[in-house]
Image 1 (spheres, rainbow, N blue to C red):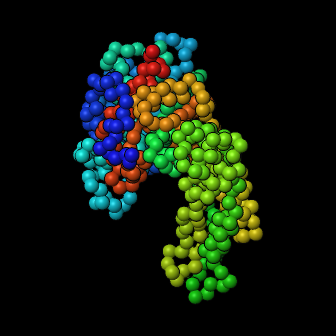
Image 2: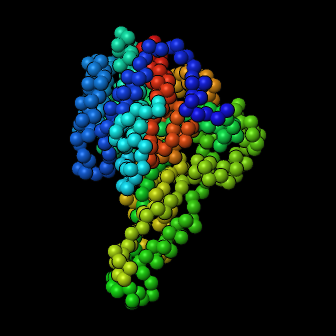
Image 3: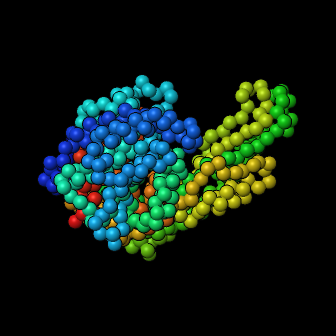
Length: 468
């Protein structure tokens, strides 16, 4: 059965539970948050603070119960941390997360949007606009869940933290990174973390056609931007000599792409394959997933033959950018190529740099890291927090399968690993990848029925883990 926006309700269970939750009110709250163009920058001084501070005020007005019950701390001017102490201090608190920042709208595409990117328009059962899906739907969802529970008169036994960073899209160092340091300095230890980053996917890629899968990510790949530079004295292009700096960098790029990283079967992929076994109906997955331990070589060979699956096994190399001469008749004095790498569990930033230098050995280039982050730790596939999430999925999406996995991109969850070994990435809303909506592109939007069922799921997770 193909999943469409009109058929989503077919996958919803327990619609009578928290049936008094006001979905339209949550949609209005999300629409209002989208109107704040909270665009991040890796340089803290370059961020326009006004939209972030405006969003802070908006959230305070929209969620008054949260702001009355929770202790609020502002981190680095733009990130938010909330805490509702539990009655049982022997229980580690849980952390529910999202991020306030969004990626910018690509210049020149503003008129391509069906509705203005920062209009916060509600139309056709969607909230339209940049950040509506990634990740203000999670922020509004978490706050809506907490607001609902407070208004129902509940009080937590387990403490509840809410954390919303302001620079997740640019590695999150100043937002989630500083928030985690703040909590660590207070001696906080967490039971589990729930962030965005995972979600519902279709099983077609994994030999389970038509099967809806709840993909809870337990690992995220590392991130490195690597510069490859070459220099020359420059001059007029009519006298290029024996070659240019651009030619040297081009040779370096060829050398880098000709030296890929060695793939390895990692424990995340193995855990995912084991979980897929009950759902895989197509070959070769059906046979391979029946015994992942014994079929590791065959699984690796198959994954490496598929461009969607191969990145799960190795560090990827993407030579994306190059800059040089300002004019065609001027020899470049400096040429820089930026290579983006996403690191598999077996790599580190230092190991990747060593690999790149070795690949370009003998070429007159300077190779160095512009920015980078090691891969996350691998969270427990079996834990109290995972059991709570799994149980909620079974209740609210009874037809969905459940698989742990890894995320190719990044989230803020990785910053909390010193506080917790159960950092999970799962946004419980069926749309996005399932319906083919763009996230960082034109016409980003969040389905309202999916938002409502997602918030009910978050209410249940928060209530089950922290109150019951």
